[in-house]
Amino acid sequence: MKILIIGGGNMGLTYAQSFLRAHIASKEDMMILEKSPERAASLAQKDIGTVYGSAEECIQRADLVILAVKPQDTEMLFASLRPFIHPQQVFLSIMAGVKIATIAEALGVSKVIRAMPNLPAQIGRGMTAFTSSDAVTRIELVTVQNLLNTTGKTVYVEEESFIDASTAISGSGPAYVWYFMDSMMHAAREMGFSDSEAELLVSQTFLGAVELYLATNSSCEEWIQRVASRGGTTEAALKSFGENNLKQDIVSGAFAALRRAEELGKN
Ligand SMILES: NC(=O)C1=CN([C@@H]2O[C@H](COP(=O)(O)OP(=O)(O)OC[C@H]3O[C@@H](n4cnc5c(N)ncnc54)[C@H](O)[C@@H]3O)[C@@H](O)[C@H]2O)C=CC1
Ligand SMILES: O=C(O)[C@@H]1CCC=N1
Image 1 (cartoon, helix red, strand yellow):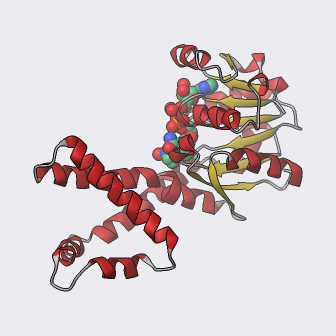
Image 2: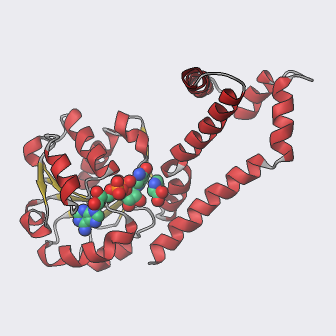
Image 3: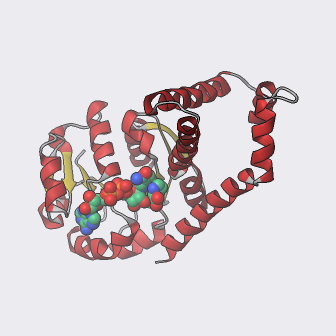
């Protein structure tokens, strides 16, 4: 199966490397279309397949076309692809917000899968939600799921609206976690720890807390209760979080991401 990845940025490169690392695709079967000449030159050094600068050179040979450009770049991209597409090609889009119907209409195709991955896919620890149009066959869907599985865990969702919701939770989510980590590192440095000490204290705390959570059946609330001794330090921090509406702020942030995904889908 020939795979064409359009957009060799963070996610496009991650996909190419992940498929090759898992031996689910070979370099000979991998094509990358990248419009930035500098980025294309850097990709060409990486030995991850053939890098192209224009659609007409490569798209007709692709069985699967992965759309990994920014949603704002789709209008020009779709217009440039349309003359070269054939109806049996399967399109996998990872672009935030852009709807299956929009892709199908703009490209004149019917086999469209929409997925929302996240950046930990770079190390095989990603989370991807995906769904598909009716015209995608079971075999095509399983083939794409096998590719997505090389980047971490996957979940199929029946309704497309859950792709936007997963964008707001797991797609953007790593940034929320790093924001929280960064805030804690900031506090650690203010308390006198060196940069490397702050990084170790915080990253090991996140890792340990998530792994402990996953190893048991207790809820976050139950684990919080076990850390927070009555009249102790954790309680003082949680009181401050509560007074500052931190939980509501995080929920509002996730909904702002959802609204933005929906807006991107309207363009
Ligand atoms: N970065 C992330 O954590 C995630 C990103 N996404 C989605 O993945 C998509 C790509 O995101 P990133 O990889 O972060 O962006 P990026 O900006 O790193 O990569 C996009 C690449 O596409 C290239 N490009 C733009 N127009 C093109 C065209 N017409 N033909 C060929 N190449 C073109 C750009 O030069 C750039 O190298 C976006 O739609 C985003 O919504 C989804 C989940 C997570
Ligand atoms: O911020 C964005 O729009 C993309 C989608 C999810 C993560 N990055």
